[in-house]
Image 1 (cartoon, rainbow, N blue to C red):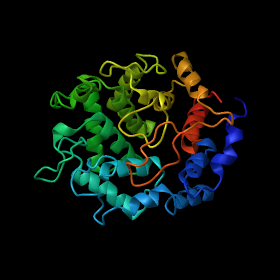
Image 2: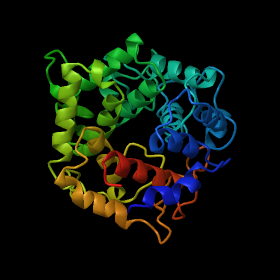
Image 3: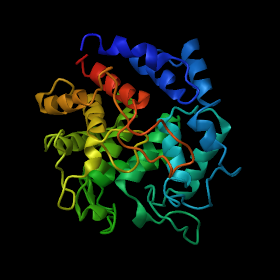
Image 4: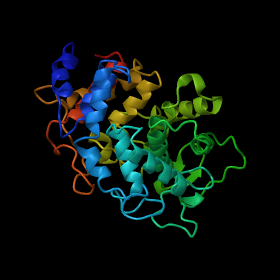
Length: 337
């Protein structure tokens, strides 16, 4: 383990026109490069020149949406919301006017009057998602993207943060729940048979972790605590959280981009971000993560939605720079490498 990071750094840092975002994140997350470092600036600029990000942007309508106007959930993996989620995960430049146009479009059309982002494939008469369609997994993914892209001070994003915390804590008596989607406080989801959804919890936690600690409200901190309680209520390696009558295979298959589902690696990423890196409750999960390395110490791309998106991200079952980056970043932050 002592050389696990240094052995892979040359591979992750090499210029790669197919996946230039890996170098950007490796400089930032593995070498602690600040955003104003010349190498980091150039690496992010490369993300906009080649690879999946410009391929996604090439399909964007001038008004900021993909495929068709409206809330942007459909077509799944090719509609607007999925592209903003992928642009965030792949390291797109927040200052790029096309990225900004996508953020603005989502805020105008995917955010309901309640502040929640709606998983509606059909635009209402007003052209925005209805409040009943707001759901943790989509909301968390989009909120994380908007925060990572620098929109935290926008009033609409503040309303989205409020929706996220009130939906979790139940502290606002006026907050409305819907049996078909966000059904009750504590990540309860109608789509998950009115059981707490650990996938949704992971997305919500990832979003709220994007808020700098020094400006997190008490409600945000409480929401993060409740998310940690849910994720630690089971062995994260087993991931036998409430989900119909089985454990989804998605938990044990690592990949990128991650959609509405989650995996054990994302659970550990979030718990490490919350300060649980040394907690023995994560030992089995770290063992699982380490067990997936190949003979060269690299992690494979086990899960993929290639063929259903506008672009391809690596080759399924082959060695993955993205998954290796995710694993090494998490191990390093946890002090286990």
